[in-house]
Structure formats: structure tokens, C-alpha cells
Length: 130
Image 1 (cartoon, rainbow, N blue to C red):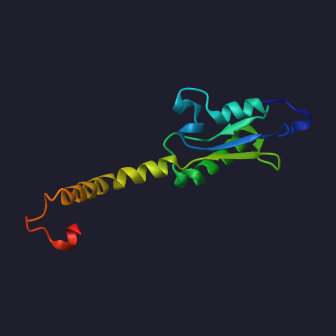
Image 2: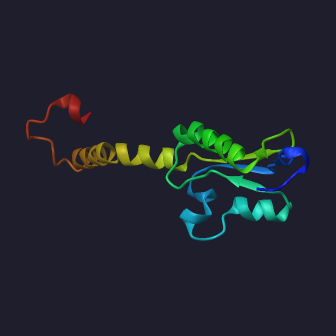
């Protein structure tokens, strides 16, 4: 706590760069300095990062709430000069691929077996292999 005249609170510091996103912006998750941190240092702006590894676009609202909470806790403010960096979406695609991977793989095998004439003559329903 900083002592100020007449008990007023110190002025709020404006955040230069607000970082929202997934592991590619999370220094702790990646285990090395992320591109967003390098950017904030290179343009000499303060940074508030609420990015977390594994985040999807559904987590952006939670990250914004976390940023608002951090601003209150550390006497920061998001203002007209604050630049928001949003790096998210990779996990959305990855999780969709994982969800659809098995059906896609089975369909590729079905098409390959049909092409190689392995399924013909085994009583496979015609609509299944056309």
C-alpha cells in the first residue's frame, strides 16, 4: 500500500497490453517467453495477461472477468490506449478434430475397403458403400 496525502488512493496505472488467449500467450504454460510478452517489451508497454493454456473461445468471457478482477486488485485500468491482444482458436479446432477423428478414420477405411473391392459380396448394404 502506498501512502498518499489525505488518504486518497494512488492513481490507477493504465494497462498497455491486455492479453487474452491460450497457451501460445501463456508464459507459464509454454515454459518460455511468449510472443505477446516479447511484443509488450519491444513496444515498451505494460502487460496484463489472463491467457491460460488449454483455453478455447468459450473461455474468453472468463478471461475478461479475470482481467477486471485483476484491475481492481492491483489498481489498474483498461483505457482508450489499452491494446487487446486475442490469440485463441487453436484448441477449438484441435478439440473438434479429436471429437470427429474416429468417425472420419472409419469412413476413410470404409471407402478404401470398398475401392479395393474388399466389402463387395459380403452383403454390405448398397447405400453404405456408394
